[in-house]
Amino acid sequence: MIDPAIPRLYAYHRALREAKVSGKSTITSHGLAAMLGHSISSTQIRKDLSALGTLGRRGFGYAIDPLVEQLAFVLGLEQDWRVAIVGFGYLGHALATFITSRESRFKIASIFDVAPELIGTAWQGIVVADTSNMETIVQDAGCNIGVIAVPAPAAQATASRLASGGVRAILNFAPATLHLRAPVIVRNIDLAGEMSILTHWLTAADASREAEA
Image (cartoon, rainbow, N blue to C red; front, side, top):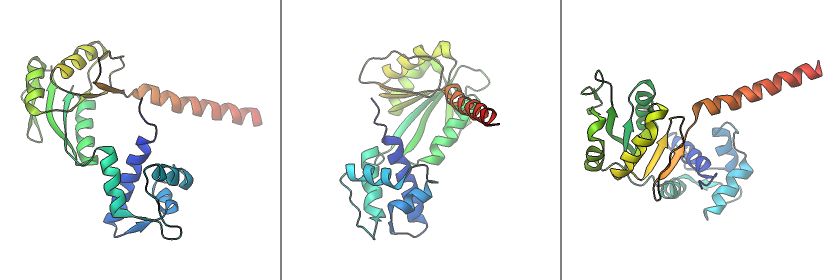
């Protein structure tokens, strides 16, 4: 099970690095909450950081440098992670660009597709390969993480082949349930499902306004 605090810890790490770049050396929980647009309360921030054994000083706050280092250790961002992307259409291309721009420790090491017009083209020096050699290429590239951006019918076979190539964690954007044996970790991202959450809240808000009218 994924610890629900992990996304928050990454948000703290990102905000703290931004604060460091801006010249700050310390920050309070209230200041960190403000940097996050108050999407996380200062109380929750203090609770999360206390669970790591990191205690700020009342009236002083947290020293940014050691906190960034500790969060990087907890999040596994002290080392480079090599990523394989399978499916390099609009979504795969956008993910490659986003991943590398958001976190320098994530390195796109291999890219795959089945489209003849994409195979052999290059993205930032990485040649898009045919999926027929996926296991060998992924293993030779030392990929730890796989990103699946293929149609649902191809997702399971893609995931199995990535696992056979030594990939230990998969981020799946295909609308399909994957079945893989441990120790491979799978994280499913359902974009349509996320949109449905928004439409649910919009519909509920409209209904509430109509009831009050």
